Length: 321
Image 1 (cartoon, one colour):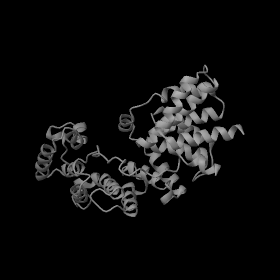
Image 2 (image 1 turned 60 degrees about the vertical axis):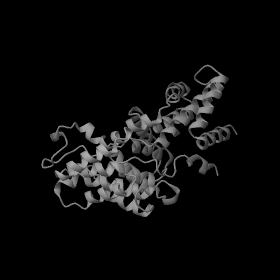
Image 3 (image 1 turned 90 degrees about the vertical axis):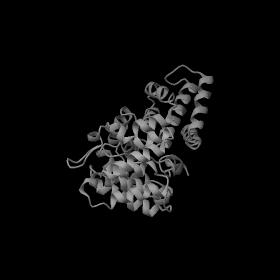
C-alpha cells in the first residue's frame, strides 16, 4: 500500500482534452515556398490558426489559408488542419499532409502524425482509440529520430506510464529519446524514473543531474521533485529557498505555453512546492515558524492537486512512525 502511494503521482493517466497540438515545424526545405517568402513572419505563421481563433475571426483565417492552398502552399494545409482541429475537417487536412507524395510535405508529416494521434486519443473528429493513438504517435516519434516529433516521443513516455497501458521500460526509453532531443518535460520525468528506479536501475547521480538541469530550464514538475529531494535529505534551507519561489506560481496556462509541459504536471510541481514550504513553516525548518502561513500553503497544495497533497501528507506521517 505504501509503495503504491509513493508512486501514485508519477504513474498518471494523460488527461484527455488537455494535450496540445504540434505546431508548424520551423525547419523548411530549400524547395518549400515558406510563408516568410510570402511576407509573413515565421512566428505569425506558427500561431496563425490559434490567433484567429482567439479573435473569433475564423472565416478570415479560413479564406487566407484556402487561398494559399490554391497557390500550392502545403504549410497552409497543415495550418487549416490546426484551425479546425477539434472537428472532422481538421483530421481530413492532417491526413492530406501524411498522404501527400509531394517532397515539400515531408517536414510536416511527423507533426501531422502527432496531431492525428492526439485526435484519436481525445476523440476529436474521429473515433476515440488508444491503440490508434499509440500507432500514430509511434510513426510521429520515428524510433527517436531527432528530426521527427519530439513531442510524440514525450507523449509516448507518458502513455506507457499510465495504468491503462503501463510499460515502464518503454516509458524510460521514450523519455530518454525525447530528453536527448531536447524535451524539457521528459528531462524532468527521466530524473524521477532514475530516482525511483522505475523502468531502470536507481541512479541517484543521474536523477540529480536530470532534475537539476530540468529545474533550471523551468520544468515545474522537476522543481517540485527537487524540493522533495532537498527535504528528504534535511537540506531545509535549500528546500525553503526553492519551494518559496515555486509555491507562488499561479499562471499555469502561461507556464505551459512557455515550457511546452502539460498543465497537470505543472500543477503537481506547484502542489509539491506548496506542501513542503508549508511543512517547513509549520515546523520552523530552514525558516521562521509561522502557522498562519503554513495553513495558507497547505491549502494551496490541496487546491493544486488534492490527491498528491494527501499522498505527501501520508508519507511525512509514515516517516515519523
